[in-house]
Length: 325
Image (cartoon, rainbow, N blue to C red; front, top):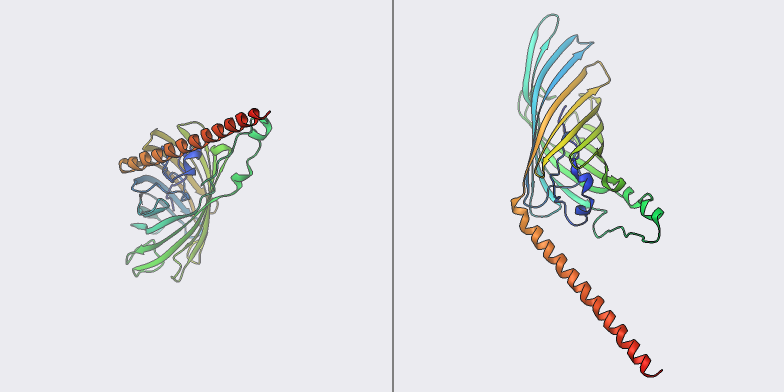
């Protein structure tokens, strides 16, 4: 399954934003890999992530060749809480298959998932690494705090229609999907490592369990690349897939991407190639940014006032002591 999502390009350069909110100065897209990032888009933010892909299949035992294309759409919306995000995942696929004796087609929704993600723990909340003016080594040594991941959970439902050729059952069904998500920032944010542990179709006759590991590197403010490994296992179908690709930031609210995916078996062998775009509407979030800046300014003024009081107190103490000397 190609759903081409990975962590967004410029989050790698925006670690300080994570100290306060999930919203970032530039778009936070899950494309073009398969993982879901721990952080959301931000309260009142709407985001669409859309891709198209081509697919080639070959099954040595069943002796068929398949080819086709598909599209995947992810709609994300931050609502009610800064840590909460609602997600709609859709994937539609069309394929033609040829065997020595016949040809046939398959086309339908390969995935329809509706759910919500919630950030349980953010290691950068209320955390700030202080610079050591006396030690170059201390400022450039490995930050052990980076080993602590952000942690989120996702819970949703799969909706499968009747007579879907991509389903293990001819009947329609609704089944749970849950996910544990972790995310680490390394090298000051230049590297991002995301882990998804997934339990899917839990209440059906063929539950699926899997993982996705994604490592993303930001080359500069515009370009990033990623590598990914995905594995899933069930009595219906099991596989292991590797992916790689890149993303380019056109502007703070628009990103384009491309990726390739393949597996290592021949029952069937699978090869995907896809391109996509991510777009964000964040106009409603600007008021919150202004409110935040106002609070920060007030806090800074309060700190300056307390510091001035301390200076005045020290000066009075110095004068008092000198009076009796």
